Length: 476
Ligand SMILES: [Zn+2]
Ligand SMILES: [Zn+2]
Image 1 (cartoon, rainbow, N blue to C red):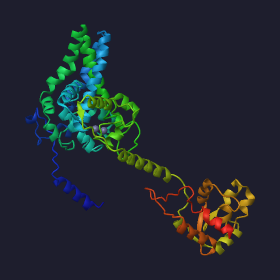
Image 2: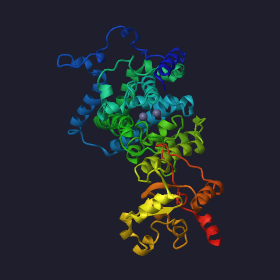
Image 3: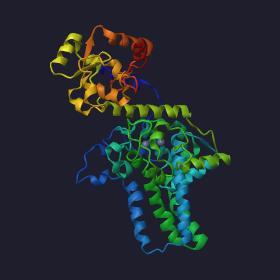
Image 4: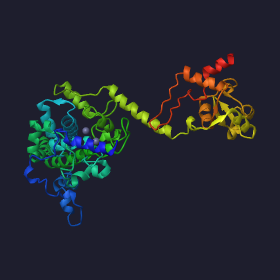
């Protein structure tokens, strides 16, 4: 694309009223001045580093967990508290994966108000920001994956994509624009955003403490294990979607960006580990498409559907999914093909007359013509699996027929190997030309190039391979 057309496209994109906006927090809208230089746009120094740190986030994701780990030393772990902590871990994790992510960020299914309230409450218990803030960032992440506008681009480092983007202040104007009008119209989302701090403290700390306290008298254990430490584990697990899922695993659908599929990430993130699939088919309610892959978030959505709490589950046709998979396999195949020696392309070979071919052969060069192509077999004579005599007898001759069944019907590998020895194309006449023409006319030979521009040579369609033509020549 030329430079002028690129800038024209950019201008067009800017003029296009796509309904997207910069992010403005509902709670502190008056505090944000877009004209002031944001701290994130100034270099970090020894004297201003503390201004770069987002202390609220850092308290939630670093200081409180540290306090939890230290307290755990003195607080014994009650069995019931341990069981409840794990159960609540899964519920708050689902609040993020099934709620914040698949429901609100991607609208991959619809939920009844009851289910929305449950997901909004559990999601708050995971302490990862409000639905509105989280989904906005996630939509920007999908729209601008791996670019400067991706709020947690893995290109800025694994640790940055995991934690750094929250520990340090970000200029809200920097993150890519997205459309969140649907979220602003969702009363559950707006209520949770406006009452975020209250919701978090209730669901993350007070609720688990009360359950363990009233349930079996373990108030302190409930606070430390089902509260603080459970928060830490849920956070670290779900943060892996931004870091590990862009770093570890395979790319079966597209390898132009960083998202990857890996079972370990899936195990850690309640099934969000098939992230290459997810970035290709973001509005599919599934992350794992095979029944045996671990995706408890998908299973939960299915269960809710069965219970009548979820409906309109979105799913891409397997035809679309498989096309992506085949194209990526083709790309890998082309890359592999381009590393192999397929012989000098025919059009780059010099054209040699029959007389020169015969003369050169008499003067010590071991040249053999097969199907109009001249091969230099000098270095190969001693290695010829059929022995020296047979190959030597073909020097200076047209060996098309004897190579293709006259003496021995050479293997596919032999045709491939022969192509690496080719040094010229024979000019004019002889049976070779007739065969060549026959190959073009009868055998429906269409040359295909791979994405690296190399001709694809399929087994049995090497230029030296002459099945039918040789049979008729023998008969004649
Ligand atoms: Zn991602
Ligand atoms: Zn997503």
